[in-house]
Image (tube, rainbow, N blue to C red; front, side, top):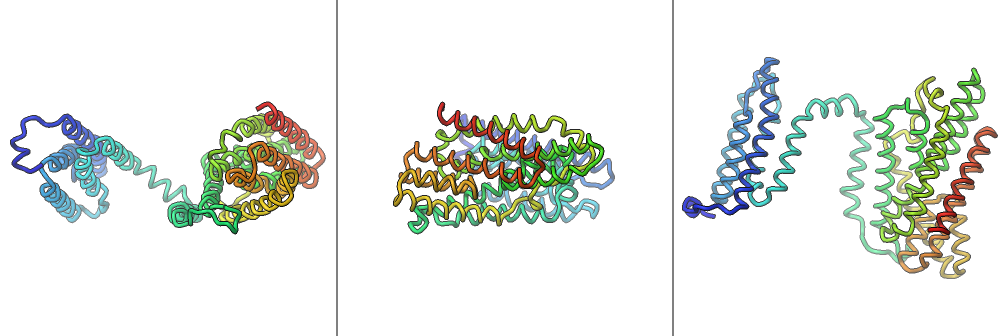
Length: 437
């Protein structure tokens, strides 16, 4: 709309009125936060007085009006606000060297422009800007006091794996890999890293005093089988402790950690299904949910009596020393590809029975890799749904048996007996759900 036409238009469209109201709301919201910040700065004697609630409200409205009057005026307004920002920064005192308010004013003008064609998007972005401004102390404390160097490094690596490598990975099946899509494999590796990072963050937020159960749950997303063995060693080491009450409490805490790691196994299966074959989620969700529920109840049972042991000292950190283990995630994806190829060859040349046997054997090495291989074959039509589900849960059975064996080998007899009983109940619930659901 040209300037002359706008001046001779008596009735604005309803959408324009909504855009103007949205722009005014954005300016008032951001300006309110900046006005409070300016008042605090004056009270502290910093002398920061640039732009308050009126300036921000006017800047947002100016952006909306400039949009109505034409592109040329919008550009001129942006240059004017930019010049004001530069002048304000040049005049700022050394006690207030930041440019947050100046940038926020320019962003408010741009949001005012955006509010005319896209009021909902502008409103959402305005709220986000206001939240960022209001979270100054929290964000500064988090970045300078809470985060440590290796967490920042791992966070950047995770972002690169997700936002740079994943979009560049080929998105087409490769015949040499049994029809596996490389992007699906890398998406799975990124998902595993996210799960590990989530467990690490939970421990950082809740603290080690929550006990070995939380550490076991977090470590279970890396390797539940390895966690069962690690907790067994802790239980064996606790056998030499005195008094007896502390010894029993710490052994019970180790058992709780091992049982909690078993909760991660069916949950990670669902995440694997979502990454590899999202169309199969309805096939595996009921049984996996039933298994996770039983495992969670067993973990809660294991936590009884463990609290007093945790109170004796800080709980152990999770098995992974870093935020996530990229090497484990990549090796897991490669293992998944290898097992998929092997199970596919067995299925083509030796039949369904041999496929189930191959999945059972693969489950001793890694349940999720075996399950992912079977799902990939099912998705490509090499196995029907019934055959694939039996193969997946046979691999789960093999994984449970491997945990029992490691529990007896690594831990004291009481630990082995408890894990045997827990795995028996878990398998009963799993196969009961398979046949009923």
